[in-house]
Image (cartoon, rainbow, N blue to C red; front, side):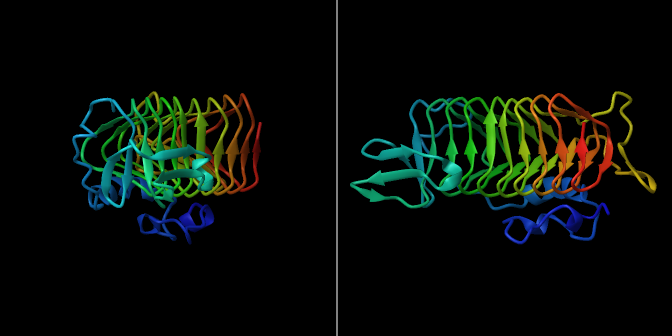
Length: 266
């Protein structure tokens, strides 16, 4: 019931080895630090991209190299649909990613996937893995040990720490995710908050039909299965697990525990 295979289709997720199909779905959070520490990160050392300093000018990452945007044409279409285009001399640089002026990258363990966009004002701390065709919007705060799959969105003034986005997961506006996992095609309404620490500070247990299950984690936000979604200004209590296709209605606080696939939480 609470195993990974009950929540996610990992067949196209680039980091599927982070998960064990037959273990509790939250086990991936326990493995995340080790997985990311052992990841092979590209060398982004360049005079054009200095550690911890806001970018004075936008840059392009293409085939492992960093370039100025001078003499390039950039079309800022929908990144998640492959419409971010970078051209030089009328030739498209397929797979080129763009980091806009004003963005800040801290640390040397940051991997920006192909055709990704980091907008101005975003702050990304190491280690972070940004998947292909993913959009990190203006003012996003990525605090480290964050991993996204393909075609994800980390939205405007959204804060993320120690969390996983599967392919096509989106947290587009004013969200907070701590120690959480978003399944494939999961979507957060504006203002969604995932609380991740109990006031009493003890381990978080999950309420199920068969009783309480101790996760062994002191910090645990929420896990949303594939195609689950939340409405605007919704909140989850620590240790909320929503099955595939579940819905948390707007302006609603989800109680901790397991909510079955297709649940509507009002």
